[in-house]
Length: 423
Image (cartoon, rainbow, N blue to C red; front, side, top):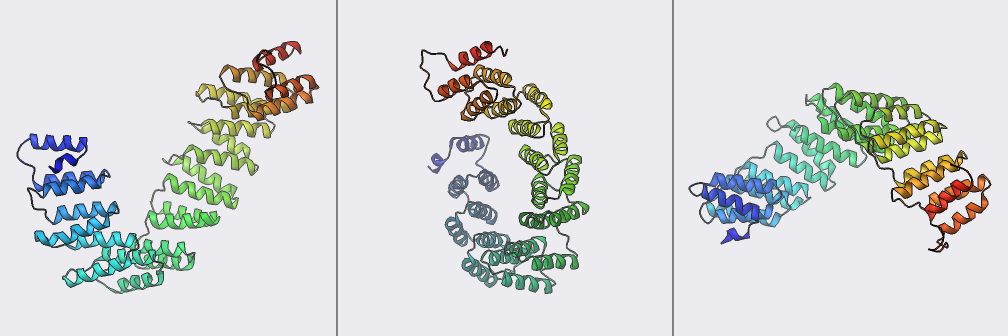
């Protein structure tokens, strides 16, 4: 029985279906096939279809649903086998079925197969619609035949029956932008406006990404503001892309304005974006603005804390460092070796080696081993305050030359603190 080929969850569902009453009808089977396809189980969907055929003749809907599933999973050979099998069950493919196959062929650049299917469709008296032509446009763009795709767009515009839609225009716009043909892309956008077709979020996002990638942040921001004025909501990704473009261009005021707009919106930027912004603002001489952003963050991570602590030391605001370090503990963010290295480095630069040594003890208490940076920082700190003998011993400890029977690093640090009356 084919039913033994199914996974346990699928088998359980089928068992329940059969238990609940009469044998499931074709609608039930088709619904379950679609569910399996949506769940990424294309092979099982195909097996269930084969199992269904043992008791039910498939119809145009069940064929088309499975063809779409197989195409989405790039199982084109099986999809075409199924397409050719339709005639055996007296099922004539409809426009939707043809469009499904044509679209997937276009997506994968199988232009020859697409035209063959297009001719077959017309020979059977099925007339193409805007979806069909849009798929052809996409295929030509994929094959780098943008000018041919553009000519088809113009033919569609002259045809009062089949007019291009937003998807068609966006496909052409993307192709032009991918080839850095910005004038032509803007021209297509102008065509949309003339024909009364409103650009959608994809239209705007294409231009925002294009300009941001070039580092022309102001142009990207212009399109973002235009999009928002049209009542189209920007998502987290496009805000982040636009911010990156503005940062590349060094536009501080625009970045600050956009940050404020993001804060007033319902969009939540991921913490990586905020961390990058804080560091960039400091680099541009606007650390106060970066610190304000930090103070408003609800869920900073360890990288946020490390970045802010490092920048506070860099901007000679060491008195605020310990408030941030305390905040880490309050928010239950575990300090790493990197965190301690930043703190140890800052203390040693200020000549506060005793506090740095106490941090080393705190590290050992947490099971964190000082790394090469920690050792080098402490050694330099000890040398700077004239404790060369202790610096030499610490160097030997770092190189692993102190024997097991000799003092441990922890005890060595404790003795140093007591002997120099640093506690």
